[in-house]
Image 1 (cartoon, rainbow, N blue to C red):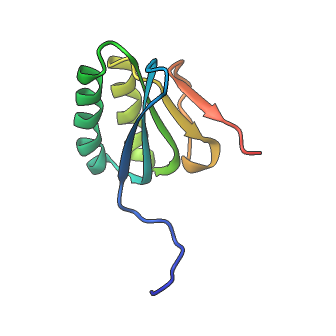
Image 2 (image 1 turned 45 degrees about the vertical axis):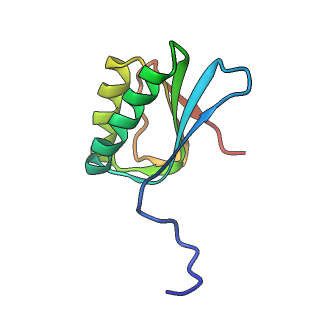
Length: 106
């Protein structure tokens, strides 16, 4: 529909490096599914390898995370030591792992 403001299901990723060069953030918007994770993982791996030891964080606060993708994401983030930031209302159940940080809606 023309002029629709519904969020896209297509996953979009932006890699940001902070001014001081201490942190790299991979920010995703759209919908994170088990299938789209297969495209996101290589982006994380390449970013980590090019980052020269800088910290890498996945920011999914603007994305919708499917429940089936959540468990896969938890395992990946723990294995590869990549913190993941979620927003409370974009997943059905938040992981209880230490790597996960949840932002609170204002």
